[in-house]
Amino acid sequence: MGKSKEKEKDVKTNAMRILDKNKISYKVNTYECDEFIDGIHIADKLNQPYESSFKTLVTIGKSRNYYVFVIPIAQELDLKKAAKAVEEKSVEMIHVKDINQVTGYIRGGCTPIGMKKNYPTVIHSSAVAFDTIIISGGRIGSQIELNPNDLLRVTNGKLADIIV
Image 1 (tube, helix red, strand yellow):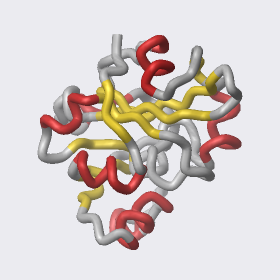
Image 2 (tube, rainbow, N blue to C red):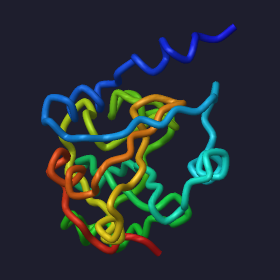
Image 3 (spheres, helix red, strand yellow):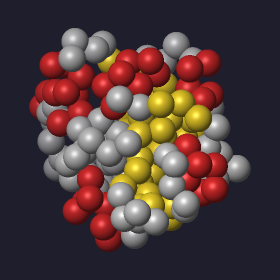
């Protein structure tokens, strides 16, 4: 048997503690899941619109610096536009095996808030068209729904057109 639902709701992730500390309001959505499933399957499961559901991608630049990109779940990161947005010659996705070491999160639970370091973060410009957007909550089975301007503020992020 899994943990009771009541107990599960009380488990705050690092990302949620950071939002609390910054007095940023957010809503937590939870779903049953034992392993990684992509954002589209989660959105379908929870009846959420793809356009306002965002995934977090981590890249490494030619300079060996890491960068975080937050894009709609049904879209693909344009590596050329992404590199330009962070003033790099080029960027490439980090290997799945490196996600935890670089971010402190696991695949499927990676959120732009509260990574091991404050990496430069770029959020796709469509985010600000919504009152709230949905991102990972910092672990599999949990999401955070918040105002995109609050996400920009807490990640010290910037907006750019970074999708294909």
